[in-house]
Image (cartoon, rainbow, N blue to C red; front, side, top):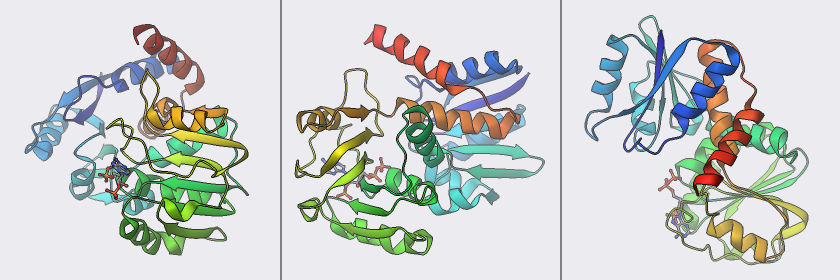
Length: 278
Ligand code: ATR
């Protein structure tokens, strides 16, 4: 049976094995997908061993996404720009590195949540790896403007400089949270790790255009502080990042197997399973 794995540290609470098993059942693909804990100093050895045992591909998660970029012998354009890899495919002697996080976010917003991005004013909060990973696919959706705001302004400006050549017709700016005062956005995406620390972001509460959509890339069965804050600020269209998780997995599965699973039913059953546990 073809073998795939999620390689990370930690991996025990990952939902990826569940998601890929559901995709495999649905598309009648014979495969095995397991969570594989790699020692912090043993990522490349873990990949090597998994490959030697017949592994066909792997998803990569925290903290190895950047290391996976150097381990790959070939990188897709979007992985190169993200500077991080979440999907490896072993092809003959090559290790092909790709990044499906950004397309996962975009597909969740546009398809699952019916939140268009073309022609809209988009605000991306954060300037770390998560923000970098989604910028290129966001530009491809042709928003009218894309603003990056971050606690450390310098990080936002560095990201702006790196991605300016890919902005196309999109007005692309970067600044601090305070700079957002007086501006309104149609779509606000939280790519900071503040929700992980259960911290609030010091944002002005008047940044939402009428009918704005707010998305937190993080998932938590109990909700996230960012979504609670946005709701209190009057936003009614909100989503956490569970759909992004399922969509990035669907994209990896499609790359590996050449068949696209239907993600909506997998997402809704995962959500009810997690809600009943939470
Ligand atoms: P990731 O790979 O999850 O993006 P990262 O590269 O460490 O992780 O980036 C974390 C992001 O969350 C950064 O934008 C960080 O802001 P700084 O550049 O100022 O460090 C942001 N962040 C983390 N904790 C935060 C907090 N409590 N308030 C505001 N921003 C925070």
